Image 1 (cartoon, rainbow, N blue to C red):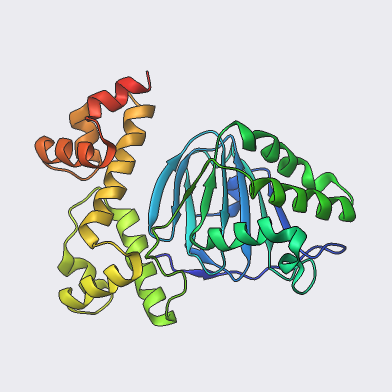
Image 2: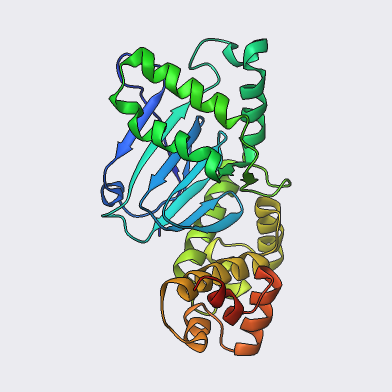
Length: 283
């Protein structure tokens, strides 16, 4: 069973923030939930899969760009790790000097950093140039790395096309005991969502009563257990509908549903269209 991984970063010599370049995500290893005190800006290239941040689960395709606040649990489940590559930049509010972002000229970046406490996904034409800048940032000299990164943050602060990755009620910082419990639950759900899952099964996993489990889950995720599992299953079904020629019945059963009627109802409730309409929209 995977557990949460608390990460610490040591910036390379000559710069005050950490840049990690992955030419293949195969080297990263199996997905685990990660949490760290730094902000994280990640750009994924030639990559598809699932992005789990806080209490959100989303599919992503081709390229992805997101900025996470401190202590926000997250992981990626990548479909093609050997062909994917990524650049991750970790930094703190003091990476460029104490109170650096509190100066008037950095007000827009300070606002951006307060917004991303729940995670932000950036998209649209206005971020394409920023993705290219990040892709090449590690080739620059230390001073130019810093200037390039600050320029990217400044441009991101003006981007209008973004979505919050966790719901407003989500609390990024949890008690360590609860954090470990919920990480066990997250991992178990992700590994078994295509099978029958029960409250009793998940409650036993963390040695609490079903009532206590429901309370802990709701507090941690700001949504109930059944809604979370439904989002995982429907997210998986969306990917199967887009990427395979499987029949809708096969997609239904591979996504953890035993009845087509229930699957169709839940799919339309979450996606706003039927599975057939969803598949046609991508053809």
